[in-house]
Amino acid sequence: MTRPGPTPRAVAVVGLGCIGGSVALGLRRALPGLTLLGVDRDRATLDAARAAGAIDRAVELAAAAGEADLVVLAVPVLEVGRCLEALAGAGAAPGRRALVTDTASSKALVCRWGRRWLGDDGFLGGHPMAGRERSGFGAASGDLFRGRTWALTPTAPGQPAAFGPWLACLEALEARPLVLPPERHDALVARTSHLPLVLAAVCAAAAAEGAAPDPLAERLVGSGFRDVARMAAGDPTMAAHIAASNAGPLDDALAAAERELARLRGGLRRVGRGSPPDAGDADVLALREWFAAARAALERLEPGGPPDAG
Image (cartoon, rainbow, N blue to C red; front, side, top):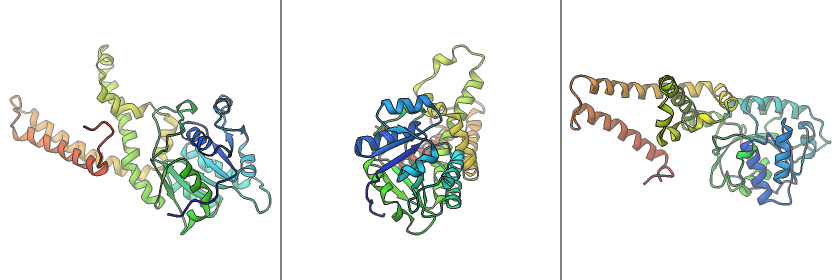
């Protein structure tokens, strides 16, 4: 991994929701001498960010390209292309050009846009593996990225070396950079991030479909449902952009999920035949093996176990 470069003089954060707001708050705390500029369509969000000290002042997107050394795009995936085109058309001073990165959850499409509008020396894709189900600046936290992986997806050899100032910012945020190709990133997060998002929505929709006629359903919502379905409480626009921008890998992940569900449903049909099942029945033991295999898979992905393990 390339070593961090000099700290930038000014950083512009475009989109001051949970992720962008957390970038601004984290940089403000770690690098108090840094000038932080904010770009957002919502005036109330800009006012809240200023009141919290997350930004020094609000600017337009075109101005950000001329005033900042580094621009961080923290907008929904399908808005990134529009921002990159606007930044490419913004007139910067001769010999001065802001470095641009992003935080979008899908990278192959975004990196193609970045190469088209800014070139390999002007744009470096990025994705922090952190977030919350709540959206907006009110959900932002200056320590959101502490100890969390921040994927960097270069499109040319040695590209991160030109982004030393951004690596310095990631170091200040206490994030852990991980460099990998955009396509590999998208294939992996389709299963570890995007699939859980979609299944949370499926869980919420299926529960509501079955429970709609029964007024007692809402009183029987347990912690297990909340743990699984909480991601469905996020921003629907963000979720739709994620799914649309990584449609192929996500479809593959859903196909894998369907295969697992088919195995489970087959086991349930066998158990449901005939007399009530006994704990020692072969079909019950087969169900246990299915759940045990899922637990073993989780332990391979998270060797230390989930936060509440044990």
